[in-house]
Image 1: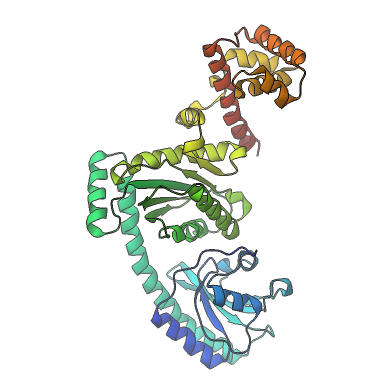
Image 2: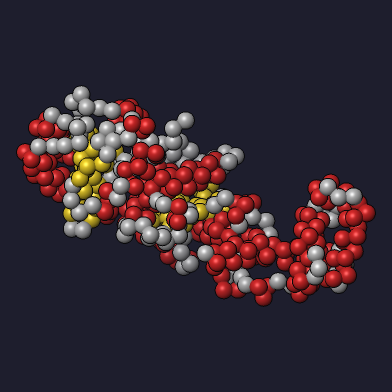
Length: 416
């Protein structure tokens, strides 16, 4: 099935009228898209529709592959209008694209279907004239939306902040304004991306585009805040999330960011634990921050950390970043790493501890004869000096192995 992204906020009637007027003058299909190439408004057809345009109009959303292709042409960095070649495999005819800017802000793109990949000078002049009022209208709408989003962002950050007094005031304001309502289930998710080579402002726009569709769903209502390289989403719910609902939502966000940003962004999402009421939302937020660190450091999570499933990592990842270093590794584990065959013995130890010290389950998991397993366990005892039948000794080794997992990812990033 073709992947599709969230819809953009639709344009106003005034913007639609400007688009229709230009389209009638040109006798060509005209559309306005946002900086993520998501449809804002469009004119009627003039016999120049292609499969991409038809799918977008019918479903209200563009295919992610088409969006990636257009963004890859660098259109959001263009200083002047130009053509984008068609792609037969995508069902895309050539387009003439005009960047719409006002006071340094890229507001979107004007897209004119041009099957022959050329326009007359008169047509280009008409398009240039129309671009000014379109940009002005979009800027006015942008300012209105920005004012609303700034207020919601400040309120949300106050609700999740460290000051109890500020949290209480923000909670009351959210309830009085109708922005949020009190419900028995509150969950906070945090989305984080790495700072890469993206053009200025692209990351923030992409975060907003990927997350905003989840502010209002069938089962949740919420608010979000976007800050440079991260987004925070708070959702209130009357019922607890369905199994895997939040994880599915997070995977969708990661997929959409993969459409809008290049691979260096490496987006991760952290899901906090559900809390009872807005007054305790800050706890879910703090948990989500820990889950984001887990998603960044533990490859097996595939970019998605869920506080409820972190186990002992939830404790370790509350240490300051500067404290997560090799000094945390217990000396017995260091000795094991330096011993002959240390890597094999360490893998055996990890499997043994993960199986709660069960020899039968460990032997089956490693496909070892029990005699071989007993030999390796004896060697581990000799090298570490610890008793694997002692709970405290086993805890030292198990936590040490978990620290190793966290440090391994940090070491990979340092080498890059």
